[in-house]
Length: 473
Image 1 (cartoon, rainbow, N blue to C red):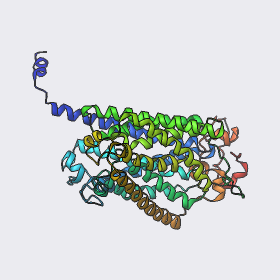
Image 2: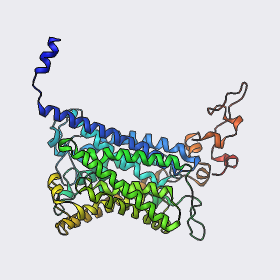
Image 3: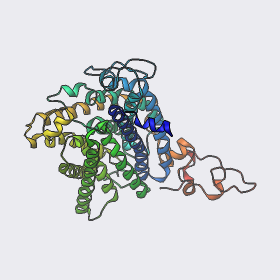
Image 4: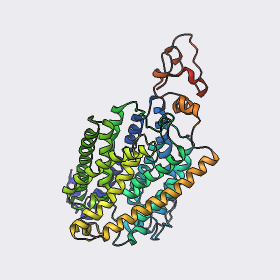
């Protein structure tokens, strides 16, 4: 007891306490952003047919794991390990004693430390989110082999370069007064959506999506409750996504960013729901959910730059954009089952441009990037810088992604054959249905996790050659 009393009298260094609080918040935010992988999984599974739901699980696990290694070896260094205009040049394979310069070195020192590790893993989660966005346009028809190859290129090169330009002091800092993208409407979401567009252009639509007359046909997802759960998880994860981008707890700014984020999502839901009701006289669940995603994407770039009352406005415009975007891409015969091009691409563009309109002079000074937006007397300079960043991001990611996917298509093939697509990716590529009871007769479930009947023989795995026995979905 006397020892404890003496320990209580030791002076506490406020700087140490602040550092520990900042580190704790960054790691908590990292966990929230990681949980977004579950959100993307449920969102995509909900919009998939029952014969393809299991494939989503394998995809998420493989992509996240491969991207983790690519980011460790190459991506982090290119994104944050140097002060070059195009890419970083230090910090490859961090943890081996290599020095780190650039933003990471300035923030946490040139030797790898616990604080650097927190920054490393937090920023990787952004890369993983951007990669998860890519596959929304490819559901139900892409070969599994495309995932690991593109994940390596995307997490190792494509995303890190854009992240360096936008977050690491690269090209975007040199455009006009400096580009404002607090948490990545362009760097993360437009990047992922543009790569998704490249994949879609080479894949084409799902079988049966468009009739001979060119009219779009609905292919309903198998579970709106699962989709809704995905949206709610993403909404929660976004509090860490945007709020964690403060990289600390000073002055309570992270709490304001979280509140702004929530208001943006709410605005997206309300406007998307109202618009789809006016158009169809039905409250489409998918559109309402995508309204939330679009509102969140739209508020991502401005979340650290705009006053609170602008948040629902920015989110509401995002909600209108996602509804219009879904109809627009349908007319172009671009089969995007989850609406990724609209919710992450178009809403990402809007969110980036919104900084040029609504950034307040107070918060521009607080963050230390760029200047006030048009509505705060900043003129068109900031809006021009934002537009340039959008154009540069789109052009670079589209070209590099098209090259990568074209190479995959030439060497391995990108799309499964018609027979596999008809049977479903679950059984052909993974040897098991996500919902076996729906597709395999009860006596044949032995060996597939079904009831173990004494003396029964397990049925052989179904393949694409047995599609005549598989019920249509």
